[in-house]
Length: 116
Image 1 (cartoon, rainbow, N blue to C red):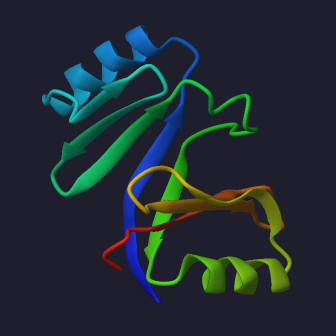
Image 2: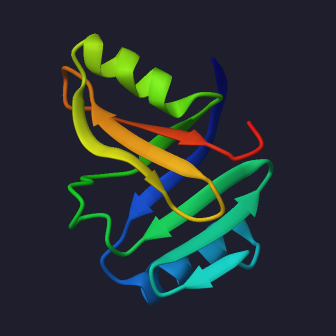
C-alpha cells in the first residue's frame, strides 16, 4: 500500500550552492542541515539534497513513494522487472529507503517511516 509521493531527493554536487537555490525556491530554512543530507519541508512536501547521490548512481531527482511495507513493495517491483539500485537501508530512526530503475531507466524510490 502507498501513501503517495511525499519526498523528492535531488543528487547535488555542490551542497552549499544547492542549499542557496532551494532556500530561494522554497522560502523556508532546512529542518535538517548535515554534510550528508539537507532536508526541507514545504507545503506538505519533503525535499532533500543528497551530496552523495551521484556516487550512488542517481542521475536526477528521485520521487519517493511512501509505503507501509517497504520490503514487500520492493520485492513486488523486482518481481515485475525493476532493477535494484539501492537495497533497503535504514537511514536513521527506523526510516527505510530503497530505490529501483524501471524498464525505461526511470528512478523510483520507496520510503517507509517507522510509524507506518
